[in-house]
Image 1: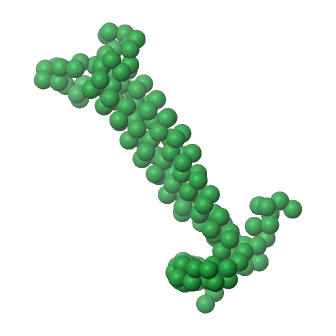
Image 2 (image 1 turned 180 degrees about the horizontal axis):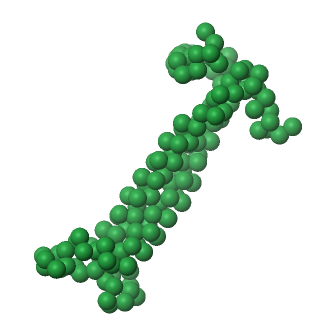
Image 3 (image 1 turned 30 degrees about the vertical axis):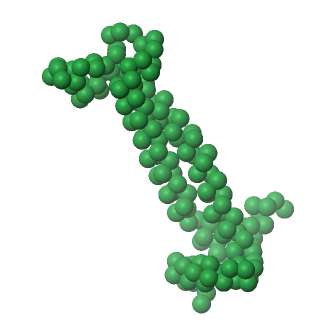
Length: 149
């Protein structure tokens, strides 16, 4: 029997099968990954604009204008700049990859805490009574039928 099967059997025995379907933490971490990705893409474009030599080898006709005072070459005209979109895409990809690796550690830690709490809640109660009390109260609020009174 694999570890996943054992955890699933443990959750079913405790009546917590609905907890397995609750992907609130995973969804929250995906939103954070998306935000980090967009922020990294925007930062990459800002660096490209502010440091023109950042990306050497770009053809002259596709470089953005660095004269932001000229009305014909405002920052809002950058959406026609192919290089800016490429820079944004590369920044987004790097941001998504790095943040998903880092946040996978957080996701694994949350899953580990839930499994350990399901397997032996008394160990938490003995070693960390305040954390045990707050976690038990929170679980009872969210899952009153599955967790019991």
